[in-house]
Amino acid sequence: MADKDNAGFNVLDAISVLTKKLAESDFKFRRTQAFTKAEERLDKYFGTSSGGTWMLCGIISYYFDNHGRTCNFNDLSSFFGCTVMSVIAYKDDMEDLLARGYIRNDESVDETKVDLRNEFELSTELLECILHNRNITVSKKKDDGKSISSLVRKMGRIIESSARMKLSKIQDIEERFAKTAFISQTLRLIPSSSMPQCFDRMFFYDSCSDFLKGNDTCLSRTIEDVYGDEDETKFRMANSFLDESHILLKTDLLEFVNKGCLTDSTLTLTSKAKEMLLGDDARLFMKSAKGTDVIQPEDITPKELFYSEESGVEIGRLKASLHEEKLCDIQERLAAKGLPKGIAVLLYGAPGTGKTESVYQIARETGRAILHVDISSARSCWFGESEKIVKRIFTDYKQMCRSSRGDKGGRMPILLFNEADGILSKRKDVTSGNLAQVENTIQNIILEEMEKLDGIMICTTNLADNLDAAFERRFLFKIKFEYPTLDAKKRIWKSKLGWLEDDVALAVAKDYDLSGGQIDNIVRKITMDEVLTGKLPDMDALVTMCRNEKLGSPEHKIGFF
Image 1: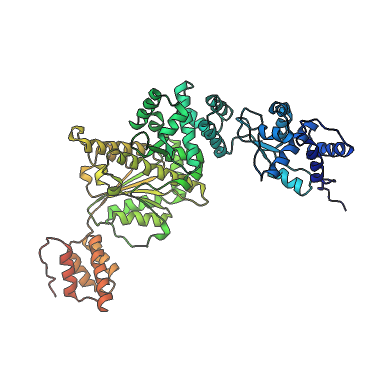
Image 2: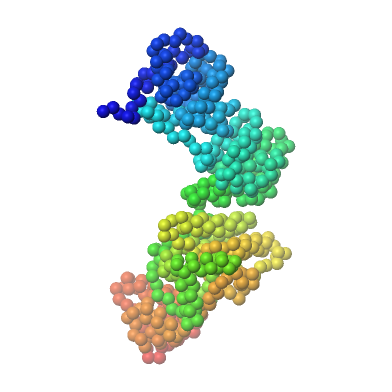
């Protein structure tokens, strides 16, 4: 039985017959019966006119003779032995080949058209059909702008070339792909059609192209590629970048990798720009903000915690609210009433009372990751960097939230600012100096982000009395952690050291006013001694550990020892 997918004749032989006649012919040759038969078969096979078949045969021949390279009109004129204009006369036939998906023209603004700059590349699908003598099944490339990376690379090539009219080419691409998310967002952020804004967008597109190639953007070279090499223009644009007044920096699309003089300064895309360009795949190219760490719920060790009655009720309400089913319902109802959806929580009180550990246990029980922020690391000593770091923290958190929504069974993470005294305190008088201005700016960023919060943010602090009023009203939950009661301390001792007798645990709890964190320290020392000596400490050793844990405390003596 004949293979219905078989072409019915030897396609490569037919192409060979045509190319032997066409090569270096200047389209002047004597037709033979073999040529006419091969031409008719190929016209029908490709569905093309004779001119289209000739052009395609020339491109195929050039492809095999030059190790798969693309070709242009100059290459084809050399193959056919004619002038370039003689080949361009077959423009309509070339565009038919483009429309059928047999060839691609990535250098053209419109890939289905012949342009001033052309590089014709054969379809791999077409080659597969020819090589295996199968009927053609070539899927036409959809002109829907989905391959943004290819589009941006093309724009980069146009911008970096010395070709004239590159601005008009970029504008043509913008007009043609205006409905794609990336181009529409760029046009929204830099909306004017006036000349300066068009060039600003070109600088951004070229920076995106650099990023996709794995390179940083050289400030000096890109200014010349985009704005020109006239000194007045070049220096004016350089100043706008270096003093960070340029629109691409003010709209948070670009940031400096290295900020020095004009010749050695480099830039790259911000997290915001990466998301515009790559969508969810942007997370593959993002570094975590300085001073942050991601803690997965399965990595948290279960731990029993003890609260006062009032704190226990509030912690129970918070924990119940953060279970996935309840949180989704709560946020839907809040949104329906026009209320903020974010859950902001302040845990405050004395050190060592379980604030941070409570966040860990809530995350473990509700199956939520934690983006843990170390404030001391986030507050850079370099002015200007602190603000960027804080912005990056919220950008990273939003990206984590988006990723969680995209994952099956994913749950919104918790953003934890631990020991946040330094950023929640009352704002300072700006006349106090530059440091006060930086700290106020950081607080303003956090306040603004809390207003827009859709997720879960928890802050812990030891100094609630110094809390700025603007922060106080933005926290939905404000839960106070106090030193444990006598009964709670006894239960903590018993939970940590099960071998203690009840009366001894009660006596230690009564005579030594220790927090849960301080009791944990003593338990760690006991564990170390057990490893070193192979035995548990006696009561005198336990009392000594309790006495030493509380700095400056008077010596206590448990009555029955």
